Length: 206
Image 1 (tube, one colour):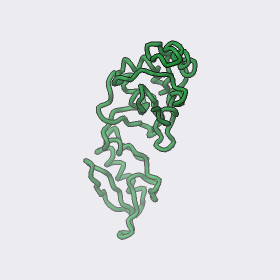
Image 2 (cartoon, helix red, strand yellow):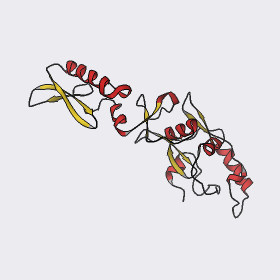
Image 3 (cartoon, one colour):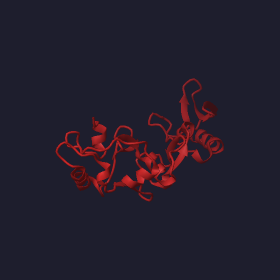
């Protein structure tokens, strides 16, 4: 049965859906047959399908089903941004897949080994220049300052016991205290220096 997620990202409603063939594991070749990806904008559009992608229904032929699908979707944008998590998703071959992972498969010909990091932290920005492979720790390094942060500086928090600002950073998945300062800006400078050393290209300062 077609899920509401699938309906939201480009497939017809369940009671209108043309009969598609059961999917096989998605490959880069098949993805390129179904969708066009524009690396400079990060956008996906549906390509026209052929009757071979469909099955004959009880009342309609696969050619008719194909014509219906192409009339509704061919050449139109694919996917939608999930307002809860911020990622763009597309329903491809009956599966709900993040657009950034599809972009990586489309361009590089294979799925990412682990995760994909959005360099500018905008989860819906799927331009190829904004995507890079990362592990979970590197994803954490590139997170922006938390909305709960009271200092206004990443890596800096107030410590009531010492009545000072403390600089903190994660190193090898473990928290590391960098010291205490009266001025949060000085604590942030200490964090930034440590981030450049420990986090490399994944260092983020704001």
